[in-house]
Amino acid sequence: MAAPNSKVNLPRCPTGIEGLDNILDGGIPRGCTVLLTGSCGTGKTTLGLEYLVRGALAGEKSMFLSVTEASERIIENLSTFEFFDKKIIDEGRLVFIDIPILYEKLGLTKQELTPEDIDLLIGAIVDLASTLKIQRLVLDSVTSVCFRIRHEEKIRDFILKLGKSLSDIVCTTLLVSEIGPQADRYSLYGVEENIADGVILLGNMQRHGDLLRTLQIIKVRGAQHSRAQYVIEITPLGIFLAPFLKGGGRESTNNG
Ligand SMILES: Nc1ncnc2c1ncn2[C@@H]1O[C@H](COP(=O)(O)OP(=O)(O)OP(=O)(O)O)[C@@H](O)[C@H]1O
Ligand SMILES: [Mg+2]
Image 1: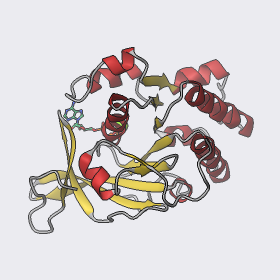
Image 2: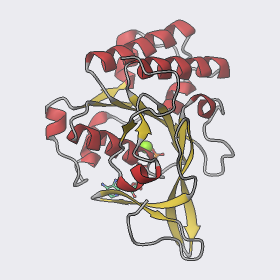
Image 3: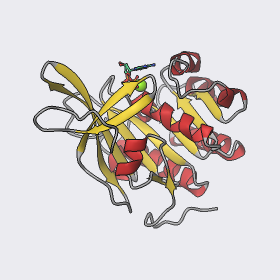
Image 4: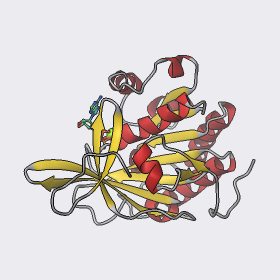
């Protein structure tokens, strides 16, 4: 089924992170591509993994595309979370793909990817997603792929084509974007956020000697959502959101 061009009134893909689903009015519109952006250690990988695991536990097929970290290490860390059940990997409901291995298989050995290389890469990702009937996908990180694309126009084209192809198979996608702590934009090249259907910003904030993690939804096309800043906590039970209190920092409840 092809997702309609209009992003209005699409069914939702619940992230499974309760507070986040509350502020997203039920979840991410299905088939949309959302940029999950933030500086180092803000929780991008963890949020992406929880989104996939919660989906897989609910019966949706999920795929994690890893560029910089080996899958084994990611799975090792994932095993420390209580919401994770290895069964979902054994049963093929959560699939890990190492992008460097995919590059090798496709013969993409040159440092800079040509437009033909980019088409090959998109084709391979979409083929995998389509064959495995993937409904949720995380690319961690799109920034690392863009390093090898380099030029704004080609990056724009890559994200547009990838997003469109995944939308056509109604796969709801998080593209992890890495930025510096003081960045004044949401992606390294500044084009990714304009093309993505949504942007979720994760950050760090100093508060009374504590380094808090924050989350803010910048945009989600066709959806009503809060733009308030939230505090997030990464715990063995998963990610919890609490409203950001200007005076004190956080409330103790998980009520988005
Ligand atoms: N199993 C765990 N239990 C509790 N907290 C964890 C666990 N795993 C990671 N964390 C917390 O999450 C933080 C890192 O989060 P994560 O790796 O998701 O961030 P990131 O934004 O992806 O970072 P990077 O930019 O380096 O890729 C760690 O510093 C740690 O505090
Ligand atoms: Mg990460």
